[in-house]
Image 1 (cartoon, rainbow, N blue to C red):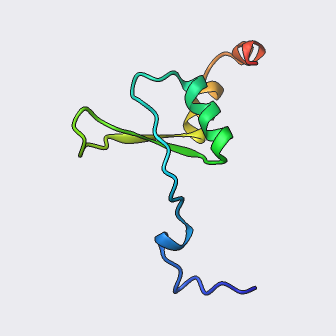
Image 2: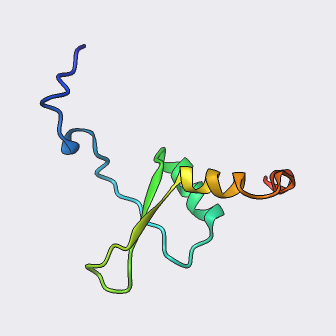
Length: 77
């Protein structure tokens, strides 16, 4: 199957079952939700319903862990 990338649009590849992470949610919980849903990013809503200040990605979590002392990996379950 050949895909014509010139005609491919974001709506053709997007997930429609959007998942969210609350701003106060811990990263373990957010990471677990990504694994459960087979996704790599969660939207993070703001205080106002129309506010979307950011996303948290699996790469964000990996980069954070990688910036720590390697011993922190010993504590992961």
